Image (tube, rainbow, N blue to C red; front, side, top):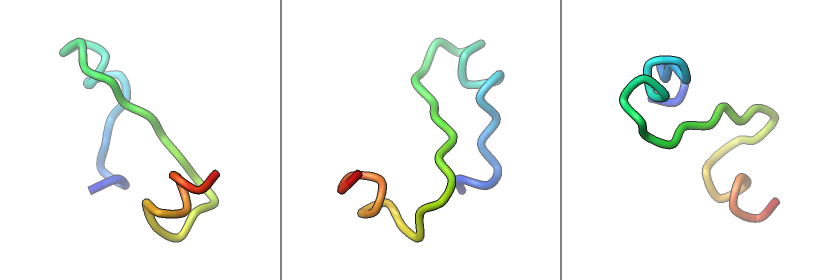
Length: 32
């Protein structure tokens, strides 16, 4: 799913969105 997320569309709906690169999985995002 992450590869298909469009930040501009998310902003137009007023929801939080972020694009993160250089990680293998969501746990890597959380561990910083």
